[in-house]
Image (cartoon, rainbow, N blue to C red; front, side, top):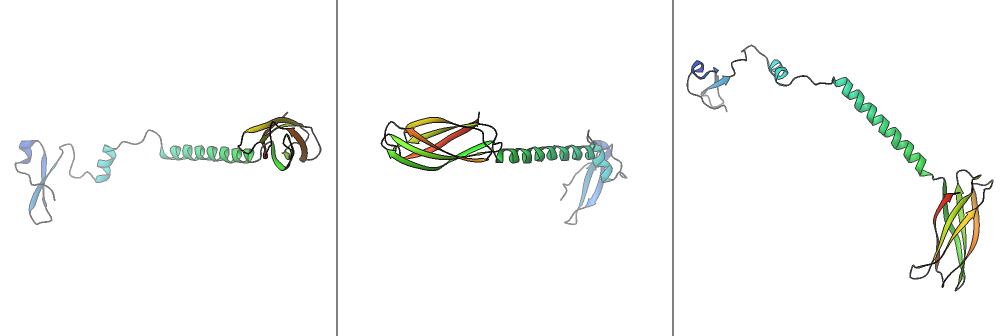
Length: 168
């Protein structure tokens, strides 16, 4: 419900319209003097909210271009890093003695013509490292290569892991 107003329009500097409220009473509503009674709501909104500095189609095109570039980069990055240049894992290990462990690793390379160096780590029961060795793996024709290495340990090893491989 609009508030009741008393006083006349010209004496307060505003034009007044009389409207019938929902309760059946008449209510006077003031209008700014610069607004004409024939002005439509669309014209008032146009005056209140000026047009944007950038045209809407240009903004939409820039957003679409940005999202396209971002998605293209994301897909390219995911595909590139989903298969690294070299990967290795322990295929098998055998504890030979209290000071020796035999480890077989499987190395997978995208380019088998490039040599690789892998770092092996043997651990004791308390997860302390007891042996570490860099293992060079030469170039070959096969993409997958199995290599067996015997590590000399400080004390009895219970497991072996590949800590990482790099292209040489």
